[in-house]
Image (tube, rainbow, N blue to C red; front, side, top):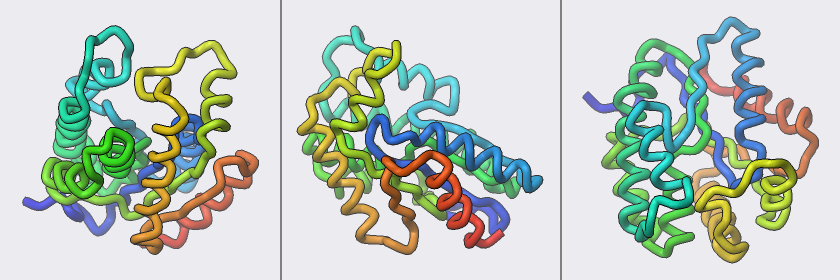
Length: 214
C-alpha cells in the first residue's frame, strides 16, 4: 500500500533548515499549540525516531566513528528514514494524527546531494524510493545564515556534531539547496527568516498550519 497519503485526516509537517536555525524550538512550540487545540500530535526527528534510526544517528553524527564516505553517509540517512516512515510516520498518519518531524528528505537532498556533491536529483530519488513517495503536506524552512547558525550552535556547552563542524562553505551550499527546493514548490513550503523573534516565527507558522485541511 502506498504511503503517499495514508489518511485524509493525518497531517505531516516537516521543519527544515541549516544547523542552528531553531527548528527544534519551533517544532516544540507548534506541537504545544496544536495540542492545546486537542489535536493528537506526534513529534519526531531525523535521523532517528526508531531504535535502529537512533543507532544510525550516532553513526552519522557522532565524532570518532571512523571515516564515512559520502555515498555511505547518504545510504545511512536513507535507511534511517525508510524505517522511520514505515514504523512511525505512516502509522501515525493513518491514525489521523499530526506528525511534526525535525528534518526529512530535503535535509538529505541538501546535505548529501549538494553539500557532499552527490547530486540533488540522485539523493532525492533514493529517498523517495525509501519512503514510498511520502512527502510532507507542509515544509517549514527556517533560513539561517551559516555564520549565524554556527554562533548559535557554539554559544552553549554542546560541541558541534560531525556535520555541524563542516566549514562554512559546506553550510552555504546547503542553505542554497534548501532555498532552491522551496522555490520549486512554493505552495508546499513556508520560508521564514530564522533571525526573526521566536514568538513572531511561532505566530507565522501557526497561521500557515491553520490554513491546511484539518
